[in-house]
Image (cartoon, rainbow, N blue to C red; front, side, top):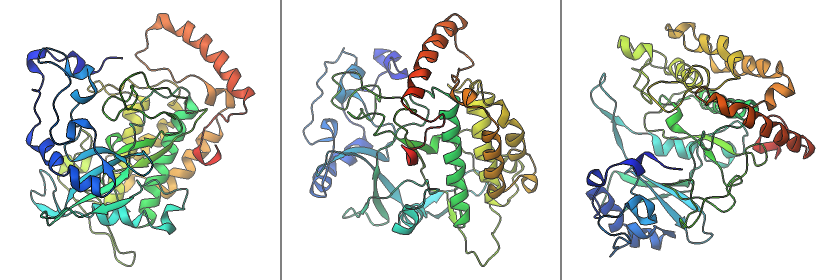
Length: 385
């Protein structure tokens, strides 16, 4: 499978050297190693590319640079598990409307939902915080260590039931945050991930997930139905915590994942919980119902029963949107009305080449029979795996 990076012309590719932000991580190599985390070869002192100047660097393990300059992958030396180390600062830029900086609560909110009390709650889908590292000489910055996650739609959902489980867990996650008086404020699909360790028992490469970590072969994986993942919300840089005894202060919305909520366009502050409802509803609309012509998501057949709920969640008037405590029961009622066969039906992308549908449909029929024989539920959940 090729990626967008593979198709970049040779003369447009980055040079063999590291940029300044990558060098920052190289300078932290020994510090992180002392703390028990090992960076991959590209970010070790004295690294020299394994590829030649005219070779395609993206066909080599060490030719892949960071996808996000503030997040780096590492192996936990004690057990070889892959983690994400995120560099966070104590202030953030709120965006075009507020035009200023405010304190970032990312570390506090991440820690809040990682307490033993919250971590044990099935409805809590906030990314676990494993450790906080304080880098000497960088006051006002910390490194948050979290499990390495994978994009939620990669590989694509195989069944309608698999897609509905993802939606359910994201709705649960936002509801749980709201019940704890926290607004996410940036809950696009860009900030949703899945723990795919059961799906990928041999692991995968952080920058090229279709390859193994050592880059020597394709990564072996199971379907979500056979090895259910768990989904999480990440990136609390814009999130806000409110006191339960006080009325929530209206806030200006931000652009999230390329989406501008109606209140953002109107430049009118509103209840941030209502903005969360719009954003997660819009995620369902863009990535499941209608697709998005400006992205790689064409939409998926089989989710039309969610449209009335999504229409309510994405109303222009924030006050007319349902609260998350109303959204979950409505979603559950919709899912319960669907037959097992509908839930096990193939999740067909709306841009799928029609010639392939009969062949893939037949393959899916045999696969479905095998899943039924194995006793796998139509809606795979990690809690019941």
